[in-house]
Amino acid sequence: MQQIKWLWSMMDKPYQKRHIFALSVSAIISIMLLINPALTAILVDEVIIGQNPEPLMRILLMMLVIKLFREGMRYFMVITLERNSQNVSYNLRTRLFSKLQYQDMSYFDQNRTGDIMTRLSADLDWCRHALSYIDLVAVDSLFMFLSTSIYLFFVNWKLALTLVMVTPLLMLITKVYSSKVRPMFIDMRDKLADMNTAAQENIAGNRVVKAFSREEYEEECFDERSSSYMNANLSINKLWLSFFPFIELLANAMTLITVFLGGYFIIQGELTAGELSIFASLSWALSNPMRNLGNLLNDVQRFITSANKVMQMDCDKPRLKDAANAQDHPRMEGKIEFKNVSFSFDTTRVLKDVSFLAQPGQTIAIMGPTGSGKTTLIQLLARFYDVQQGDILVDDCNVKAWKLQQLRGGIGTALQDVFLFSDTAEGNIAFGNQALSEEEVFDFARRAAADDFISKLPEGYDTIIGERGVGLSGGQRQRIALARAIAVKPSILIMDDTTSAVDMETEQYIQKQLENLPFSCTKIIIAQRISSVKDADQILILKDGEIAQRGTHSELLREPGYYYDTFALQNGLELEEAI
Image 1 (tube, rainbow, N blue to C red):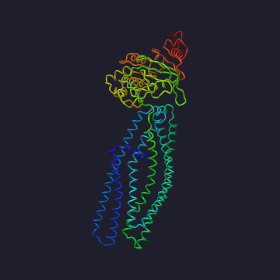
Image 2: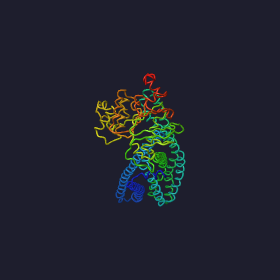
Image 3: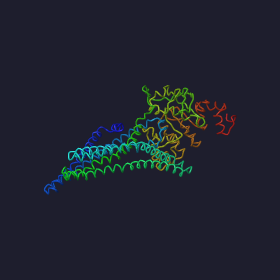
């Protein structure tokens, strides 16, 4: 089974040896199960029927020692298997999380967060369960059935053959059940992912839910998904219960066969009472593996379904990676050139034939209506996606020939959709540059106009900021994000509507600070405010993915178009007055 082979490869070598040893111990424990019934036969035939009490205490003591030894060995075996399975679980979690860090943005566009979390939690736990329980039950059941069958054949082959003949019927029933239940487990797992996705989206968007008073609607949506998951579980249980009576009937038939046929053989003198006690003691050892087979197949099907999902996640490789001939760039200068760049999401054209040049240290501003491709343009620069046509050059080198870590490490980004981590204010600012001193953190916070309000927080820079910056205003979150972007001392600084939520006075302060940074960088500013872009060396106006206008502030005010209309609207002035 490829899933087991793959899972085995995730276990560290020392743990593999321990795992094999633990399963070997399990097999030995199963075989030792035969000892006490054999001693019971001696007890019946020689002590009770033979009226010889002398060996009684010796036999009872031996039975007690064997029982205690078996249970002690089983305890250490189960502990070992649990440790081994936890080792695999740890390795897989670490491996998958590491792979997620380097996945393309398109991967997260196509996979829901809830589904990813299900793979990292419930699916991963079923992989662990396979190595801590499923393989144990399989080995236990196999050796118990084989050793018992062989032993009973030596005791009385006729009675043993009769009992063993029942087992093919049990195996046929479980095989039919297995074929029916597998697609049901796949469906149930998908419904679990749907339910987790609904919960994750509701928690992440709780403020929006409250703002629109949609609590009841969200509750109904989650209830619907939860109900679907419950019904999928119930369907599997109902299917199992429809097969269970037949399995129980055949399992109990073994006991009846033992009593009636065993009694007949005693009358015929082909079996002793002690030997019958062996069959009575071990008939369950033949039927129990068959009983376990149904539950085992249940678990195996759930494991296969979950393992396939985890394996798919493990096998998904990022399409954007360092080229074989990727060049080494110790330091980025900041020159940017777009040459006839076009890009589409599936069949939707986003950018078309975009070209511009930014020299190191220059400021490029990008404006345009919503959906014109502004954010996509900067995502292409950082190579979150690859262009389909044209070339993007940084320092006269195509971004595809850059090492991704060096390319993105030279770019500081402050996005419109601010995400702050559940960390201190200082930790959030120093997120991209852990080598920052405390004084540097304070300095970059001052340059982003964030020092004033951070200092007033309950514990200042040591105040834990809630997930996504809960407790801070939009403008405060933007200023921390800006401080985080400039703290990496980038060669290219991207600001995507970074000051849209701050007042004009604060914006002017930030602009002056950005002009006097302690390092040189090329700036790309995406904004809708004229005040944010008017001092740029070049202003690009995007419309429907194309550059409709370009020039400086004064040049664009001399020609009709989007820039002039925006300026007039924001200032309430006619063109003549504006000039």
